[in-house]
Length: 244
Image 1 (tube, one colour):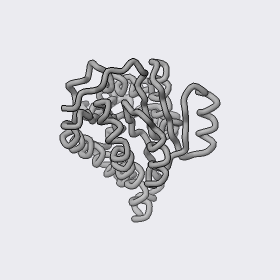
Image 2: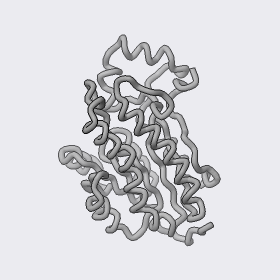
Image 3: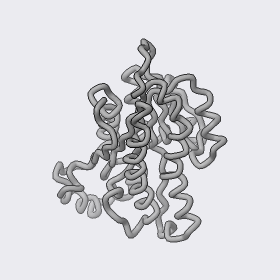
Image 4: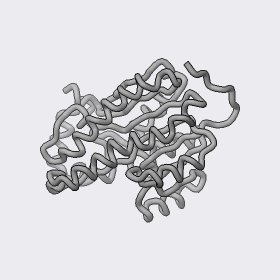
């Protein structure tokens, strides 16, 4: 097992998809805890808005489907303690039933996780760092509406377990969180529809929608010293939805 070198420097945290949705809240949480945070995104307007709101967080454009884009960001890092793979897309209106769209979603949500993780492996190994992947409750359930998203998140769960085994000798822990119904721009159409939202609340034992901060707290825990003997875990953050 590789042992981390003693350091008084703050942890360096890279978050893909870190300029919007759950990823942005995770980035803010790490920064508030004193980490040196690098948040990445793909949308120019989102990057600009994030940079204005959080000037203390470094942010860069990153396309997780492109090796050159990943290399440009990762090769500029001298250290890395934590990688959070939060970049993801979902295509509605039946688009994921076409092969081009299916391939696009898998390339971002699954291959993108592997692409960035591989690029960061050596940096993480130097500090016995950790990876947290953002999976989904659809890692457990199928979806007739978004088959590519569901398949990709199921793949993220298995990739997490596989990397946890494969990279344990390097001292790298690999875990994942599986958010349930969380209030983000991606779910706005559901939580703003009273009847559809009520169906979700009726099944959720805790009786409320989750907030991005609920996910951020779990990510922070999995990256903390309290979780040093935890790897290969898929942690549901769903208010009990998956067990009801």
